Amino acid sequence: MKKQFSFYKLGFVPLIALFCSANAQTKMFNGNLSTSPAKEVVLSEDVPGIESTGSYSSAMNSKALRNFSKSFKEAGNASWSQTEDGFKAEFMDQDVKTKVFYDRKGRLVASVKSYSEDNLPKEVRHLVKSNYYDYNIFHVQEVTAGNKTAYLVKIEDKTSIKTIRVTDNQMDEYMAFNKVNSAKR
Image (cartoon, rainbow, N blue to C red; front, side):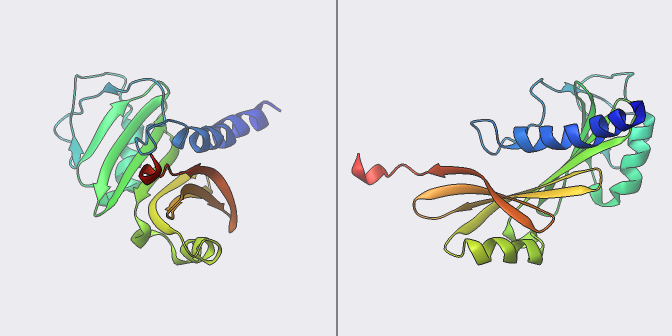
């Protein structure tokens, strides 16, 4: 029973937290997944492809660095920071901004990729466009936790902005806002 609870805690709770906090702020595009400010971490200069910022923290986990360098070879210069629950690495690869989250033991918890419609997988784009054909896709967040991936697709037309959540080829309207018409004021 204890193992099963740990599975849910490590697998589903972070996934739910990511979905809820990714768009819960009034600033829609800040992308912060933690409500507490990140503490900056400096890494030794002998680690290639890692950008050092802030002051040194002995809490930096070498397992997180190893896992990161194996999984994200395209990362180039990554910026690392310490979060309340572990560590976060951020990097840009072409037009995709990626944030990777590790727990205190250096295990991968989740990743969040932010990009435009051009990088959206074709099957996800088709699913959204076939139901919202008069809308433009202007931003995508791809959230992966464990073996589950969800897409938060931000779309807009003349009167509204919506966030469409796509998981396992299922789609739902996650958020919706009406635009204020400034011509009527």
